[in-house]
Amino acid sequence: MEKIELVVFDMAGTTVDEDNVVYKTVRQVINDQGYNVSLEEVLEFGAGKEKHQAIIDVLTACTDEKNVQATADKAFANFKPSLIKAYEELDVKTFTGVKELMESLRSNQVSVVLNTGYDRKTALGLLAKLGWEIGKDMDGLVTADDVVNGRPQPDMILKAMEIVGVKDPQKVLKAGDSTIDIEEGKNANCGLTIGVLSGAQTKDQLMTASPDYILNSVAELESILL
Image 1 (spheres, rainbow, N blue to C red):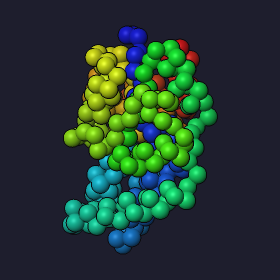
Image 2: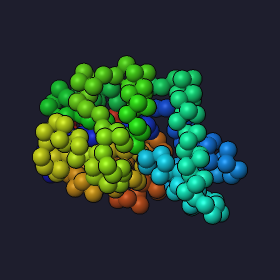
Image 3: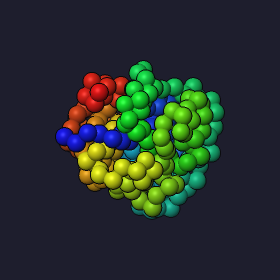
């Protein structure tokens, strides 16, 4: 295995514990259109995706909606205001050991970049709640706004590599809590892909994407990498 020079961590459910508020909000805006989808369905079909796409995919898989695009547009129009409100009331924290891991990686010359299916404003709001700063606590942030193609396309990981100057994807590790994070890592040809059980999906769901490891939390990477 090549020495890992860059780790790309997903945010919600991987490094940021926000109690699934995003997917609860996705569920709410869909059900406000007259449906009754469960949080489990939203997590199964929407986890890790850009949120408009997540709404389309949940409507397609879980409802008999004929006009998916128009209904998704309506639901998505309510998504950001609903999420902003939910976030204002939310206590955002990180998972045990994650901050220490990030410090440990960076002091061992491994770059840390966070990536997310959120837009930049939402992501920066989360970092502000945690008191994390780009350049001080991590080496970069890549959001859905920064690329043309969201997950599972590799654009966000390629952008992360560009930010820190890593040329070889085999020296990159991608970790996330959904199959789409793992697919993204494989599509970028990352040296290692890691699924974590701290967020959206179960071990069985993560297994379908064949990650190299499934861990309870990214904090367990310490023993693998260092």
